[in-house]
Amino acid sequence: MPNPFNQQVIDEFRARHGEVGGYFEGARLILLTTTGARTGNPHTTPLGYLPDGDGAILVIASAGGSPRHPDWYRNITADPRVTVESGAFTYEAEAVVLHGEERDRAFARAVESEPGWAEYQAKTDRTIPVVALREVPVAGPPNVNADSMGEALKVVHDAFRRELALIKKELIASGGRAGLGAQLRVNCLTFCQGLHNHHTGEDMGLFPFLGERHPELAPTLTRLHEEHERIAALVEDLRRVVTAENADPVAVLPEVERLIDELEAHLAYEEEQLIPALEAAVQPAEWAAEREGESAAS
Image (cartoon, rainbow, N blue to C red; front, side):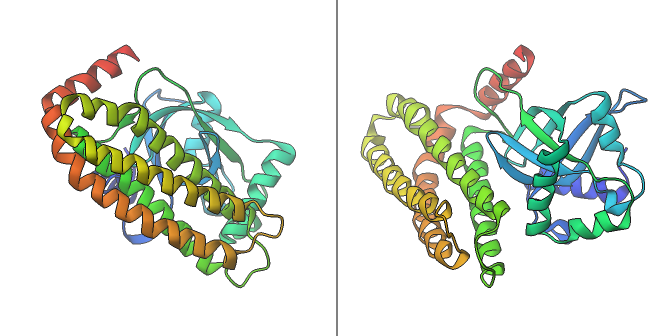
């Protein structure tokens, strides 16, 4: 069993779909479940992470600068197949330990965004490992941590809200630096790609699904699609300034703020209009049965 502190974090994380208070408040956090190297039992650990793009995130086996690797790291070296809970989603992943220059570049990005990692490294003689968690593709829709389709929409939206607010906070904190930090650039680009994927999925899947069952929603769905196009233009503006040769937090921040304003209005309208229709289209019992079927198939 996790220690009492970790268990409290785990319970709050699951109850609030990834949002926790206390020590981890405002942090990027996942729950990582590994298979015990000695016992074969599942072990769940709350961990901070860094976005890495392309369906991967990075976790760092610092153990607070302890001379020994943390238990979860020893577990993944024995069995690299893990389960990741992001708050919005639960998915299977492959844990890959980074080595050499790849590890050093990733760790340098981490230190640039949070100097505490360097302090942990200075406390120990071991080289602190960096591990990439790469999502294992599966057939079918993603496993959203929600009890209904309406709740699933809200959970995913809230995850985008939290991440964009965190990026804004990071930009403000780094406003006095010369140049945009490498990890902050990755954070922005990962968000842009994730939002693009989400809106593409809605345009191709969710909106046609609702349009067939609720013809009266046609004007609403048309408006939402048009809003997707406007947001896509803002996302492209953000991507452009982030990837500019002399990208600077001061230049990036206004683009993020424009995107926050437009996206919040869009998400609020979509939730107001679509959640009632989603709850009517698929009852919670049907949603649960469908998810159980997907789990059995996987």
